[in-house]
Image (cartoon, rainbow, N blue to C red; front, side):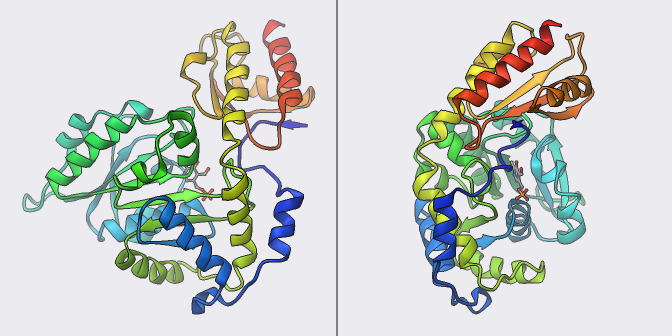
Length: 340
Ligand SMILES: Cc1ncc(COP(=O)(O)O)c(C=O)c1O
């Protein structure tokens, strides 16, 4: 099977497993796991921040950041298609007592002036806005990369309103590779970032919250309350260390393969290949004779797995476990289906 459903499906490489097997460990709830401590220090430094906290999932990292920035009965603003309000099962409200309000799903084309106009200050018996969240790259917008200039403008909006700025950077590595923006340049714009080691970088588990030392101390406490205090987590952190060392540099290959898939499928009017800049190829089947579930079934029968996200929406994601030959086969299978 050529599995193009998600970049979370990658299996640890033999070298990664070796690094995990030989990791030095301790009890991380006691702060005594040297491999976790080293990973946290490394990721904080990558983004030019003081501290970072290892979490089991990106969702937990996002929710810890939301709770750090937005007190109960206050408000978070984000894109209507953001992971934090689409796939985190109401956690901001259920766990943090946080109200969320969204701007229309705009992907990377977020308008800082429109966001500024949404901010509600204290004192008018309305829920006050405390933070703005953006997603880099934007998953549901097909791995779209928010330009650095837009993020800088949003920072200005946040500063002028006295609210915080969070980045769901599950795939910030992909943006860094696609746009050549240094990770520190992203880091300096945000009060908190969540970053994932298990999406595209090939680690089996692991994300981090990145911020200043004071917030990360509180984040440790929130993580424990959420049940995310892990013990000999160095085995997992070692996979993350290996991923950072060996798997960021190769992301350009995944971007090239996604572009190749998109260019092959563009003739069927299901994707705008020019918009595919990272590892996600969104398929819009609204003008196609084929609907998404039928595409999913036909592709599976021919050995290719695609994500079916709606009646007319599907998605292909490239990653470490699909090479050039796999993409050639996927192109043959999918173009064959569209030609039927
Ligand atoms: C943009 C984005 N943020 C956060 C997450 C959450 O990660 P996890 O599945 O580890 O909770 C994902 C997962 O795919 C994601 O795509």
